[in-house]
Length: 412
Image (tube, rainbow, N blue to C red; front, side, top):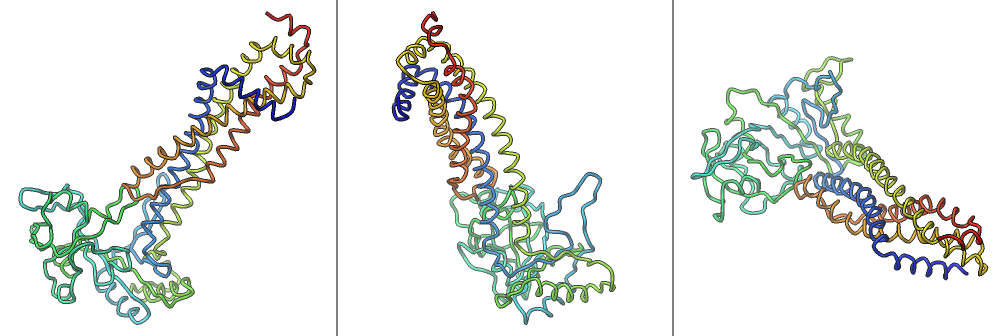
């Protein structure tokens, strides 16, 4: 008996016990679905983050009164600095406008309610005051209508641009362009609509009403606002040096004493994406461990079924040995049978895992994730199936190969 004949014999044996084979393969399939599905979902979420930050540019960074992304430990307070006020933000913009584009933005209200006719939004709409460079530097695009004019920016005209989530809540079939909303007691005319940006982990990039910076300040009269600053330059090749120059200018604006830490946070615009990338690395390890535990249970179940198969085919083993089959050939036959069952289950698991993993990623990222075909995890799944087949089949196959042919022929 050669290897080819052993493979064909293994397939014939599988076909002869079709129901048992299907049930066994299904166990393996669920394990592979768990493993590859989790890893595919994590890759899909990472693609959502990458898509969210793809338009920010490589040479941009943000200055805020708080870190861009901070993981707090138990008992540790969130690190926040004194607000960056309008005078400081404007002074920095004046200093750096000759070296690159500078954008100012402020969150006027994170829990606003916008009203149009008889409709109103949920009390989680964000009102953002932004200058003429904000959309370009932060990757927003106007899908319909227009951006703010210089006159509207300078004279605090009551106009706004809406995100798609706000439009979905206020309008049915009517075009929002040219209509007027009531927001925080102020009437705003809609002049534009943002393209869907997508958001990471349920953020509010599409649940937003944008107004000119001066209009935002007018709406927040009597309240202390903090301003976020974004700086970008296409000519800079060494961003770290440029950031240090900006840090020095901002320390001067904030009048930070020499030797004291910065009273602000300065981060690359893609720092959150890079931070999340390290988190997804940990998630992949966790997902792999969970999938491995599931597959371990499936491997034990397969070993049990292979032991039953060996017992049922004891006379067949005796006949094969009496006709000249060596122990190594018997061992090879049962190992191949176990591996083929695992591969059948693995292929089925991969077919299920790809859509399931992508659906999970789409649900978590609110539709911003790209469709992922995880070639690496597919190949890993197939390799693991072979290893599981070897692990599950080695002892039953060894037991079969060591049977005494005379005793096997007597078995009833």
